[in-house]
Image (cartoon, rainbow, N blue to C red; front, side):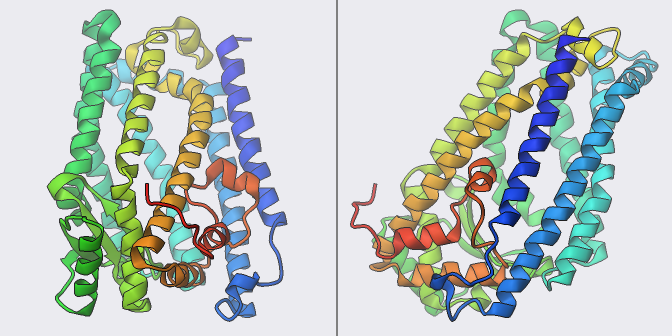
Length: 416
């Protein structure tokens, strides 16, 4: 049997089994009693509801993963990739256009397959627990907007990557790395102004008690506010959140309107202080740097597999091509990407602890931030007791109980 095929099948199997094990352990870690930290906040009925929510999402996730794995294995063993390659070549275009057809069909097929899963999760599971506020019109519009953005950004970028590997020889991967990095950085800059408003409405926070408190907090941290906005998250979900996006003069702190409606001014200031902490502690720059390095390593290794006949044969493709090498390499890259993702998640969790401590010190105490974390957990039906293996494998944020215990009492550490 083809060695590449063995490696790919083994990688798919290991990934599936690891996810299944993590989900099984996660369900086993559920506890009937409400943790002491949430006494008086999470009543027994609501806590039980959060566990049912986790179970429903877990069962749904396992079904979706199993279905997608079956689709991938079916394409490999029935010659689906070979058929698509022959179809893409049948138009007799040059390799770049042929590659756009090949990759475009795969992307579109993946998106179409994902629609019923996304619809079920939105209109059945989320609705069952009172979260969904997405109308069918919005759901459909989001899909087409996403496809349009992917085509406008992804197709030209893919064409350029194909041209680099076709024309620039051994250094092609360097040019690919540089261009992809520049595009990603450009998108980070312009996303808050041009892309995100296509999906949500961002409104500058009005004058009043909350804005005054936020301005005072930002001044205390020597943080120049480029903009604090409320986002109409309630159009799609009853869940609450806040996030920092963009760089330079385009950076924004966005508060979901649901968050503003459910929290006190002091709690909202503490949440915003946490987001300021990410900026002041250079977490965004560090994660971007890690992403750039990861991208460079990927392109370098990819360059060693361009036109590899053995890799093409693993998928039943007789004639290797640059475009098919890009797709097939993704299967080889997945195991390494899983390992790198675990390290990235660990770094992200560490950053969250640091931003939590920053917020507590900036606000003078941890009480308001802990209160906000508790309310967010209850409102979003957060699992309070995830299994450590699930956290290790997938979590970008520490479990909320771990965050609360780290803050109470808040360690007397100097902000970094």
